[in-house]
Length: 78
Image 1 (cartoon, rainbow, N blue to C red):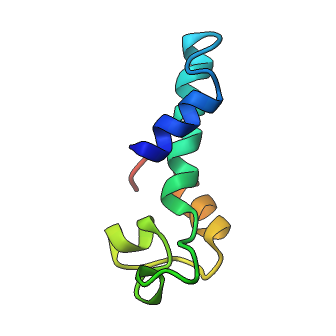
Image 2 (image 1 turned 45 degrees about the horizontal axis):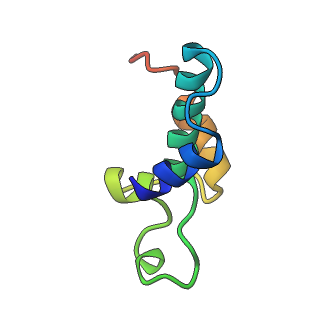
Image 3 (image 1 turned 180 degrees about the vertical axis):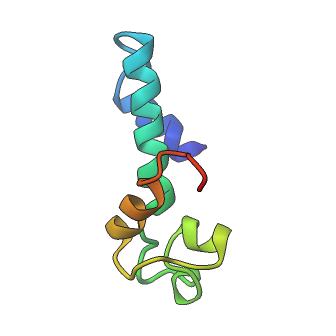
């Protein structure tokens, strides 16, 4: 939550419409969940990202491909 608090502070919290504020929070959360861990951190030896840690698998070695693949269904199940 500290990272989100810093981000909200740098963007001057919810400056604008509520819809744009909600979309920016969702975008930050997606980038935070799928972004790779620092290569020098100890956790990066086991997991590549918070998404990998939560699910136990990755779709692709590239973090951006993981983001695109997992969001391609837009929350709809098959």
